[in-house]
View 1: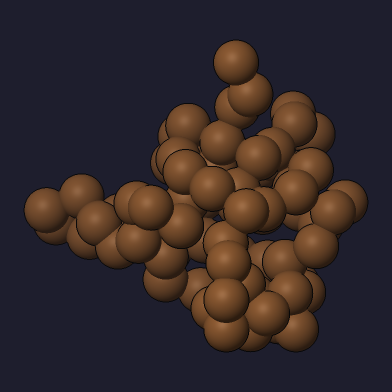
View 2: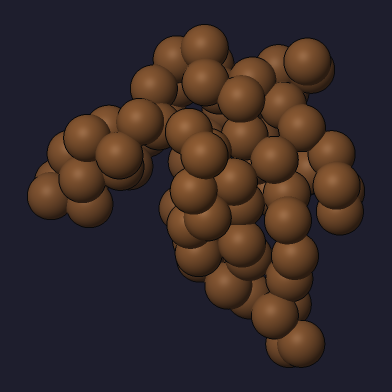
Length: 76
């Protein structure tokens, strides 16, 4: 089973293998730098669990659970 960005723990970093976000959101994420080989770091979590703040390409991004589960990662 592939590891996803949702599996990251607070402060942990992984490397994006690929993401399966479709449509305009997927295109927008690619334009912001969420591509294969990019480091992704778990920054913090909202009080009720989601959204989660991750750091990619020098900026912070809030993602929902469904989006995190569609980002496959490998260990750094």
